[in-house]
Image 1: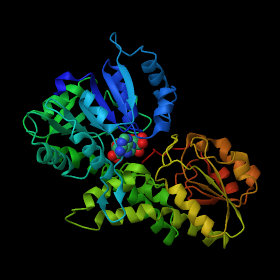
Image 2 (image 1 turned 180 degrees about the vertical axis):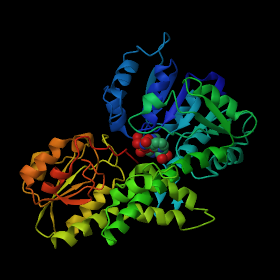
Image 3 (image 1 turned 90 degrees about the vertical axis):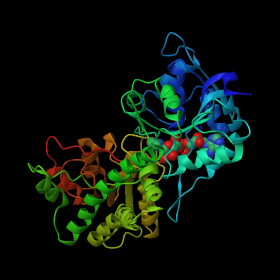
Image 4 (image 1 turned 30 degrees about the horizontal axis):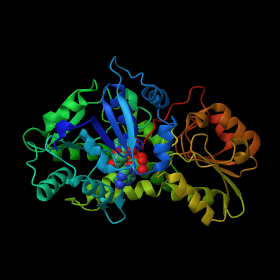
Length: 439
Ligand SMILES: NC(=O)c1ccc[n+]([C@@H]2O[C@H](COP(=O)([O-])OP(=O)(O)OC[C@H]3O[C@@H](n4cnc5c(N)ncnc54)[C@H](O)[C@@H]3O)[C@@H](O)[C@H]2O)c1
């Protein structure tokens, strides 16, 4: 059989936060799509017409695709399967599986390897295999080599392999799929061209490059963000040591200074930033440099907890409210969030922890219950709700003016990482600056 007998245009393997919006977007542009995931609960939700996670505009897109309305005059279709081998029904196979890292600085490729092995026997000339997942440098060439070794394909002539990294931020998928340049790193003579045609379904410009350059560009964009946020986080720790105010120092660095630009402190982790640096660190010429960046970001919860303990003494048997579980503002994504680490650390202090997050699926207590009688409030996510003035007013009223508020995000513009609720209410400016989201 050859891929010219295909009954679908594109298969998307892994209907997660990247794969599902992508599959729906292809269908919305009139392509016939096979969506594949080995999680029957996820497939069931999609089949029943429910987005399994928040994505701006995602539910309306799913409704449109399932109703057959489509965004074009020629509506596409989405069919679903649990079997990776069913991807071979499509000409293009896009892999959007998770790529975590092992704890010892190495990409964990098990899901990718498993999908490759499922596909080996069913791939045929004409197929293209696209890695959309974030991968370590060299992975795309490895995949091409694996197919050549086990099936003898001429990659780039018979079967096409490329890396087209996902660079979209959660919550902005539908906006960015048509605007962010789509990087395509194809192996061999024609892979880039073939895969570029697939992504031509969207409005964004296609930028052709080599596979390893595509891999490096994706990973290093995340490393840049991760390191950018580590600097203000380290500065926050230094400021505490010198009894200085980190927000004032940042203002001094940035104000009317053409070479300023330091970011704001905060909780920096999440499913991509926390692990992508490890893919580069695997073979780094300066081993440890990015690990140090990671260690700074990872130690922010402990730094904040110790700051609270320095001011209040032991936290044992004291009520502590944690606001926010998501790693990113206004999303329901709590994977690899540092809030969980903060909560674990607080529990080890024997504090009575109450958690509130209005977005995430994990059950949390209502806001009023979380802050009622709290002696410390940690703002762990900078959700819009938390940045409202009335949130601070409610803390001052219900937790008490002498409740210590720990806010690395500067949610209310009062410019204090550690301050009592009554002080913050006085210091808060009429129009607080906003702190951009990260993760
Ligand atoms: N989430 C983001 O914002 C984002 C942004 C850019 C890049 N990325 C990268 O994209 C990739 C996917 O990320 P994600 O957040 O969508 O992950 P995810 O965990 O949300 O999705 C992976 C999906 O694959 C499914 N799956 C796992 N193993 C499978 C198998 N063997 N067969 C079929 N299905 C399988 C899971 O059930 C899940 O639904 C990762 O490499 C990530 O680093 C993510």
